[in-house]
Image (cartoon, rainbow, N blue to C red; front, side, top):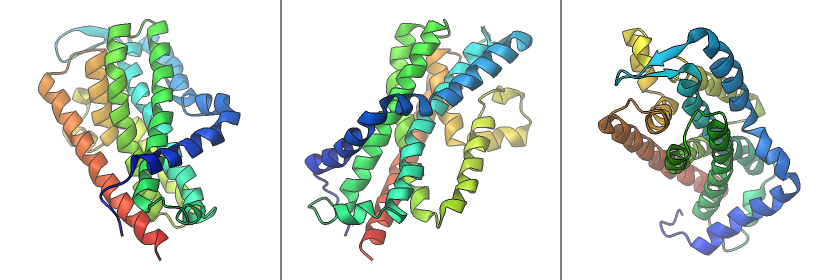
Length: 262
């Protein structure tokens, strides 16, 4: 059964195992999840931005298009780092490597496996986010104080997509199902107010954007890094993301426990 009192030491043991495994491929880990958002930022944010010009914010200020797109790419970097671990890697360990069944021979319990894997996904997402924030500061798209204020928010984004990825991984049947998840990731990236202000979308499309968790992550990070959003909007986005993370993790942990105890 799923216990509500996981032990920190056993959770840390699961997390540290992943840390030991990645030591030999640190450079690959650092680059794999951050390159795609960087390419989008440079090609669309900077390249297309030179043609688009400045964009107006809700408070009337105008910002360069690259500065508008950069927080969205930061959210994408945090999402990629977390979801790579808890969706793709987690699925392989669960369905094919049978790693977690072996771990259950130790005192570690399913909920501690889930917490350890989510913790590692959070570490990976935070590394990607920190690298991307440093790039934003280097390109003069954000100041250091704003970048430091945004870093804790990327932790929330990592938890949300880490928990969601873990939940989806418990539902997948085979590797072929990743065609759907990859498509869903691209849909989230392209239709979450990443490149176009939601105010410029038609009414129905604007409501669909509001259903995207990435859109709320983008709104939260954009409000902190660029400004233009009210405190109420930021608080609402943060609350929705926290609620989604808690719900996804609770369901994912229970599904993992049932699967491992079959």
